[in-house]
Length: 334
Ligand code: HPA
Ligand code: ZN
Image 1 (spheres, rainbow, N blue to C red):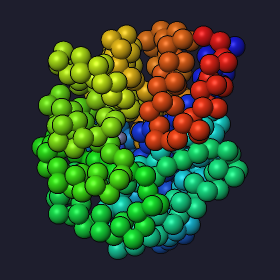
Image 2 (image 1 turned 90 degrees about the vertical axis):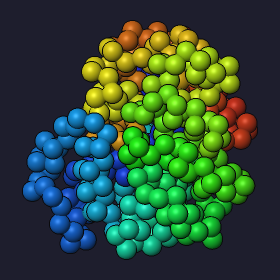
Image 3 (image 1 turned 45 degrees about the horizontal axis):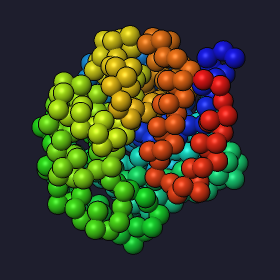
């Protein structure tokens, strides 16, 4: 079995995926036309050519500009269905989708428009592809905690329709501590908690996410490698890291995939997973992230299997949902 086939056969969960980051330029232009929205680019080719990033912020500027094409409930449905189709083809059995309501409500869209479209896609994906899913509302950390509370207010009448909350956008200068009260409230409400930390920010941000926000997983977390004490803690507590290798290279966190610390983290005993983050912008969906990383870092089949197992174990699902996926995984070679 070649590596592409092996990776596709691995039952896996995608746990770090911004649904707005799956907006391919073709669909972006189609939606912009159908909604009468002006984009900053003239064509699909010009859009793709603009995807040369030097850091997280240079990406976020384009990512928020592209999201302007999304206006109607059907747009969010189409967006998520396009993702689910690709994910299913990559052997994803379960996906936890991040969405950024503040990006849309700031443009005058109703929170319900976003949620309705995404949720309808989750239901349809289960029927059409047998894929399970969860929705995780992300707060934009460049905005204030007060604005985060206002977004939580909008989500409250529909709380059972989301499974957790996360924290994304510009990391530097916006430490997890800024959102300690908001996350405490979300914890009281029974939501699962995750946060981006240690993508560009220092190891201290990861410690804050764990101690002050009490998150269950860390999104990215690659800068943990700079702190031996934090590494030991992540191993001891088996905190899952949702690592996104192609994203890290595109945003210059690592110069090349061969320089990525994913294998070293895995060998140190950290519960590493592989995810695509914003695949329309970073050059590949989760299958390509697995294959390219395995090639660059010479990951063995048993290491790939371990990474897929980690993702299934770290998913916010019941043991009854998890068990058949794990059984399928263990039946594979490696
Ligand atoms: N980091 C922070 N915010 C984001 C990202 C990311 O990788 N993708 C979309 N929003
Ligand atoms: Zn992310």
